[in-house]
Length: 361
Image 1 (cartoon, rainbow, N blue to C red):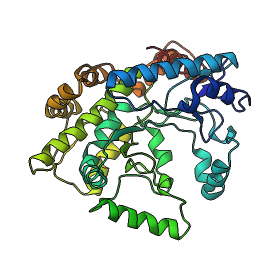
Image 2 (cartoon, rainbow, N blue to C red):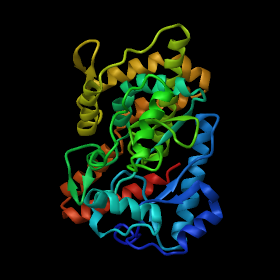
Image 3 (cartoon, rainbow, N blue to C red):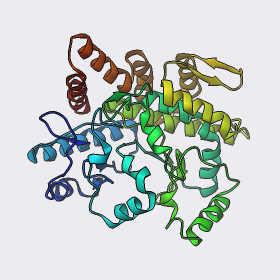
């Protein structure tokens, strides 16, 4: 998100020269988003978590430099601590104009940002099979990524308020299970034929077969403020898919649970993050997140070694120990309030922390 250095509020109107300047520097790795105050970055295809980290660091640094040349700064978070969504301006693009026309008041609250992780799975039916099984871990990844505790200047009591906004849109939430890729395509074709969507890019599930690449795309995560957190979660998702593939090679599979059950964990991650544990369906009990994370790391140890990302995945324990971005934002805010600052000043301190942490590589 693009913010004004003085005061930290979102840049409501962005200079027209900003995006051309970013495109000149970074090409297609940077693009506009729905609101003018947002910028999307995307790495090239990376062969390792370390390569992804280097690419993200370069992109954040370059975008920050161009933004600074236009008297702006950047923050990486899924919501801004105090900006008003209704004060923002939509990017001048036909696709976004049509989206605003279609979704009306719902889309006017869309002052949120998320993190998408693509993992290459070239076989179409394998992509669907892995999607059906991988839904189980989505709440665990969300809990580890949370960065949106504030909305419109208020402490929402949720670690990922972004999900509350996102849930208002159609075709969001957990993916529906399908038997084959052809089965998925038949369902999408109905929506395209009726004119509801133009193509599968308008399927906005937490996990989906990408419409553009031969990948499985994880979309449930909040946008990580700390770069190392982003790489950790991406590597963990990749390792989990490899773990599921290993099961398949031995004629086994992860048990597939009903979406309404997984949705209970999705809500707990949405509300509490890592604080109150998630349901272990096999045990029929709420289990501390640290214990669940330990099991996931143990299950995927072989995969982390094979993919050369043991260090990146191991950072998950550090995230848990010091807190996600949501925890740290709340800590900054509460300490400022305890020091006697007014609410607006304390929220400004949160933006200051976000600016600094976004560029800490």
